[in-house]
Amino acid sequence: MSKKHIIVDPITRIEGHLRIEAVIDENNKIVDAFSSSTMFRGIETILKDRDPRDAGLLAMRICGVCTGTHYQRSIEAVEDAFNITIPKNARLVRNLIQGALYIHDHLVHFYHLHALDFVDIISATKADPAKTAQEAIKWAGISGYKPYTSAEADFKAVQDRVIKFAKQGRLGIFGNGYWGNKHYKLTPEQNLIGVTHYLKALDIQRDLGKMQAIFGGKNPHPQSIVVGGVTCVQDIQNPSRIALFKQLLKDGTDFIKGAYLPDIYMAGTMYADEATDKDATYKGIGGTGGGILSFMSYGDFKLDDTGFYEADQLFPSGLVLDGDISKALEVDTDKITEDVTHAWYKGDKPLHPYVGETIPNYTGLEKKDDGYAYLKTDEKYSWIKSPRYDGKAIEVGPLARMVIGYVKGDERITKYVGNFLKRANLPVTVLFSTIGRTAARAIETELMADVMMDWVDELAKNTASGDLSTWTEFDFDEVAVDCKGAGLAEAPRGALGHWVNIKDGKITNYQAIVPSTWNAGPRDKDGKLGAYEASLIGTKVANPEEPLEIIRTIHSFDPCIACAVHVMDTKGKELAVYKVDPNCTF
Image: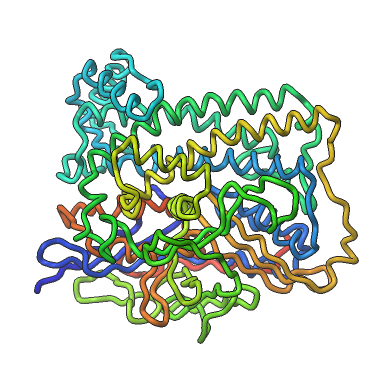
């Protein structure tokens, strides 16, 4: 059997630095895959010996995209350690800030990071604008909403722009796409719809970003969340600020329902054969890109004020293991560990985050006769650790949240997932695929946009009644003596945990397991694949020189990989090394 090694480095249209190596057989089917984050982060080390009240402002720098989520999770970890319950207004404001981040992030992900894995830009130049308008009406009808764009003139204007740029060789960021690859399946008219909505989403996402800034102070690094509550008192008592938030939310919701959802129905229908191709799966359930089929959610978005871990939640916590949708298990966070067998860190056993270590141990790449450097896949090959739940590899993210909510019978999630599957005339098992993972994010976006309208009204009603409380007072010197806490909830990309140990008012240990750690991690000591790696097994590649299918599946997770401290060229030659002093106070 002849095999070929494919290297995709860097994976573009993501946050951070990610390398994928895949092995394909003579039928161009992936039989092995390896995921590697090629650059070191180390925020945990920087947080040691800091005041825990400042941790959130530093922890949000873990990411340049979901900054506010890291910010809040870090603060919640400290609140857990101090046993603080925040006021109702603070809960609602935090929900609205995070909800704004979700719908902004999901919209940007589909259109500006993932859509071009489905949409062929050049094919759109051959479309008939009149037929395109009818096509847009058709898919909006299937989704049950009014089309956001259905005028022939609008589609013609976009097509003319693309044709002009293509003729002039000025496609810019679209210039190096795999246009014409046979695994692009949309019609020219459908491609023109995708391009039109891509451009419109640039305007929409800007306004969605403003929503986070209304209560957060700014975007992407909000400043209004503090240990004990929030600081935006003047904003919540100003009706015009709440009204502006609501109007921006309404405008964004119109695009979500009239463009985003119809585009997902369109893509899902055209790629339905892949979503049901059991021969292209890792475990024979679902379709292409299904992966490990084990899912976890910590749960998130508190719906009452009974306590951080006691409150009802919009997204329920739970586990669904090995594709068994007949039951959901409860999460026991004591069973979470991180393995570094194949990660560039020192360590000889899996550790719980409370006692976790972040000690770099970079061992390099392997240079071969062809002049390229390859991952040492039998040894260490990634800066990402391998999180495990009771020894199991787990996928997290919107798909996990929708599957767990559906299996647990959550009323809202069951309704939104059920409506989508009914309108698309598809079984629930199609969710276990690249297409399903992408669809789950859109389903969640619609749900989030709708429920946020209720939260805005609830906040307005509560403040109008005279309740302007936004902070719970506490005695720092009394509570920060010797304690530990965890902020375990969800980020747009999945389960996010921050664990902090505090002694005598200072952080003694800090660990964060982010969603892309769960999903992008390498093999563990037992050889179990991470979610990215497993999702690629069985995938058929039309053209190994154009690994569109690899990129499409990896993008369906919305990778958010950590930042760098050293740079390497494609042959493994070290270009520069930068040493960061974690004790520097500037």
